Image (tube, rainbow, N blue to C red; front, side, top):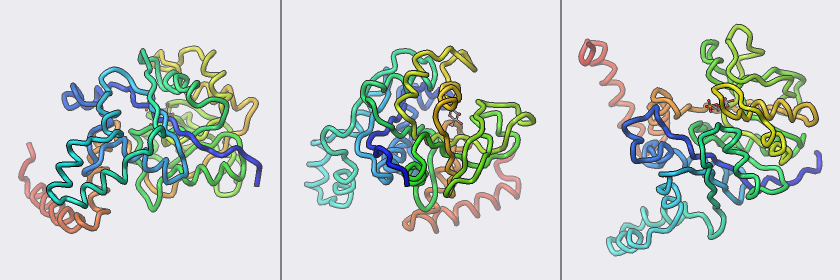
Length: 301
Ligand code: G1P
């Protein structure tokens, strides 16, 4: 067991535009779209808390005030729930309220990429290792992915990446890692490539949006030239950092839904509804009858 500084803070970038969900995201942040009855961003916050993280730094942008309101008190709503005797809903709202001072917000002023968004959090993170959770990527499993990263980090120190297998044709959508020696319940990362051609990729293990990073990443990001898509890429800065620091990967045992695309978002809604005791039978029966009527030709063009 190495002597590592604890992971106390998590960065959650929420500045993206959500153009893939227009018109739903014309006025509403994409992170506020619901999976069943909780906004997408709530899942990342809950996962960070489950991993023992105390403070969340949101990197927001213009038109994202609704996220700030979601993590604040709503006194009118609370007193009206209380008057109506809706104690279950009231205690759910109270339970999910962050303790005072445990969330911070900073703005990314221009959409210069994920690397730039992370760099915007440097002052709030300070000189300590931190967790990074991309909220579009929603963990679904016995527990969230970040708890496993924190455990591996306690053994190895350095930088840790959440990874998962994807289909060969999906390799070009993500950052992909090369697989080295097995270390504890993970492995040493030999290389990282952003959105490679599937035939040239070192594996089909993709970066699933969960990271533990050393603060030295901020120095790399500060000097990082623009990469793919003319954006400052986090993966490029990690490649630079890997020359002097270790990177290990934690293969997530659950499944991550890519809620940045419609297909993944709809799948996540079905998976989370099926996992809920109060909904599973209803949803299962609905799905069965929808599939049967689809197979009979109803609804097809
Ligand atoms: C980013 C990262 C990529 C990672 C992905 C997960 O890509 O650059 O390495 O696999 O998130 O969602 P983006 O989705 O911003 O294109």
